[in-house]
Image 1: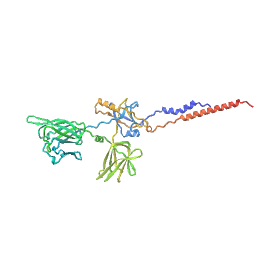
Image 2 (image 1 turned 180 degrees about the horizontal axis):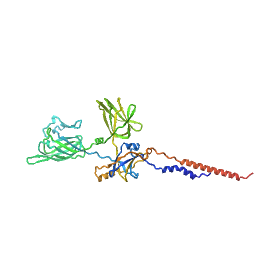
Image 3 (image 1 turned 30 degrees about the vertical axis):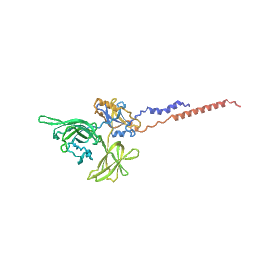
Image 4 (image 1 turned 90 degrees about the horizontal axis):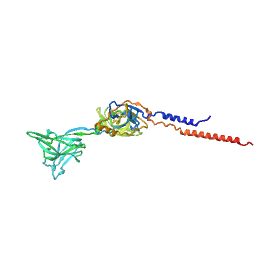
Length: 454
């Protein structure tokens, strides 16, 4: 029976062809996106369910959004928004700065106390009977001031003066905010004139302000200095972040070497840790230790907890930078009557996508090898805000329930197909060797038949 080498090669290649014909779905899970609200761009908040679906080693680069045709659309982390501006308004009394004598210019000291309040002092050698010509204002916090206005109910005399206004955060370095501003109060028998407002816009937030008399004279000494109203705005990134935190309560999952172990639904970037002692009077120093994911643990923070009379026993620690982990251990230097209650705070990241193509849109997550491309979403949002408004925000697209796409197998390393090249080569070589041997044997027999018989 003759063996055709062509059929052997075809048989060996069939498994490879079958593998290539199989469709390779790259993502493990899919989340439907609610885009019923019409928008030119959408925000997506990636909650714990997305972190649980994505590969831990991909750092969310294995998360994409596809349209109805299954084609990826522009999708990227949403650029951070500038700190929110909060309206600021407060009243404060002008603090007169005594006039120092020419031969004792260092007799007046301006300092801050532990709370940042202004303390003005003068020794007896520098005392003078002159009316003060400068006043300090403590706004209580750093703010961008738009105006400073004298309270007319605290004014006791008429005046026509000009002032300059400076701002500072340390009472040492001062920046000019307004110069040669006229202030007037005239209450006559026939008419009344009041100009009591100073427009003093500050480009940087400042807490302290100095009003200096540049022309005119007024008696605003200690005991009868007027009150002013400061109006402006301020930003507080720390407070804003704290107000946006989402809190989770990890599942308490037994003890290891006396430490209480807690587990989150996924590896999340944590910012805050809140611990509460169990009921009963107690005081303890507890240490929060996180799993680094490489079989090592490291301490994140420690808290001093005191619970008396059934009250208290709670403390919160805030991190400067997020710390990603899924497992947490709480260690106490002294015995506890039970597991403390643990809450963790984190900021779910926001992503944005451009709805290219037709709905419905889906978020796909979880892949061993697939990674999202880089999209210029920052530029797209800038252009959208230029045609809408500076504070325009993409509409929120809420995530639906998770469903399998390719399933958990998409997160596993693909099986390397068997390399049939070497076996096929050995078969070809073996067939060739057999062919050569058969030819040699045939020639040998032919030679034996051709030999003359003796």
